[in-house]
Every structure is written in C-alpha cells, then in structure tokens.
Amino acid sequence: MSERMGKVARCIRYFSRFSENISRAETTLGIAPSKTLVVRMAIRDASRELTNLYINTCIEKALYDEIKENLNRYLEKLRKGEEIDLDELSRDLRGDLLRVRENMILHLEFD
Image (cartoon, rainbow, N blue to C red; front, side, top):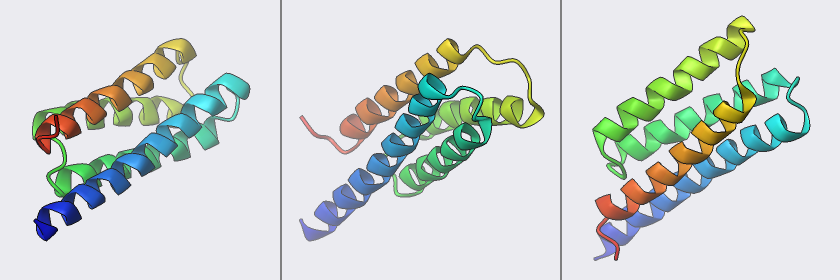
C-alpha cells in the first residue's frame, strides 16, 4: 500500500509541474505572444515533466510518444522563429494537458 501511495504522490507531483508549465506557456501566449523565449522554456520544462511521468509509469508510452513529438515540433518552430498559429498552439497544449490527466487517472486505476 505504501509503495503505491508513493507512486501516486510522484505522479501527482510530476503532473502538477507539467500542468504549471503548460499553463505558463498558455498564459504567456495570451498576454505577450512575442515572448517566445518564455513560451519555449515553459514547453521545454513541460516536456521534461512529461518524461518524468513516463519514466515513473504514470502514463502510457503511446501517449508519451505522441505528446513528446508535438511538444518537440512546437519547440523547433519557436526556436527557428517560424510562424505559429498561437490559437492552435494554445488549444494543442490544453488538449495535451487534459489527455495526460485522463491517461494518468486510467493508468493509476483511479475511479
């Protein structure tokens, strides 16, 4: 029981950090879309927490791979200074956050 609770606590901690970084990126996009460095840093940090979620078996590999690819694609576009549809990016980030949350709940077998 204690081992499971430890795993759940780690998963919640990593998800919380993932969520904070996604929110930071979204907020920056809404307030100051020209601050691409801040958005890049937030997405990079979210990607790191996504990896922690996967390593600690909080989410499934298929979801991890898909979202990691999406985050990396946006990071590359931001790094290169390419044109990005900010509304689409914001929707994608919010969608990724919800999908990770749902997958984590299912994966940890919460009701």
